Image 1 (cartoon, rainbow, N blue to C red):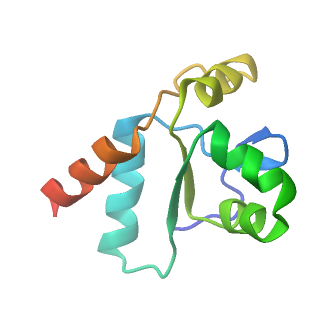
Image 2 (image 1 turned 90 degrees about the vertical axis):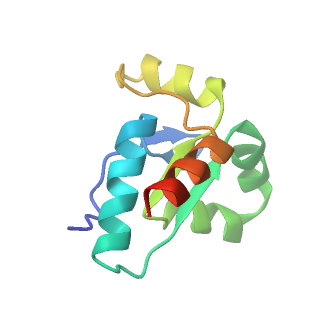
Length: 102
């Protein structure tokens, strides 16, 4: 079930999902299987910095089903905030895994 209460790491006002590649794929499979009308964002520091000056973009990231940590600085901040199992979810690898599993 989709939960708007999913825990996220707050990085400068952007909620990044504390995921690993495996958990990102698992949650995405649930999204596809249940045909939920939601979306996934893949972002790193550049996206977080863009969201500082673009409120609409920040809303897009924060209203996503998942906002994956596509960059090590986001992962390091997640670790500092207690999410030790958080790993990088590199966008091209994430997409390749989603496509190959469908």
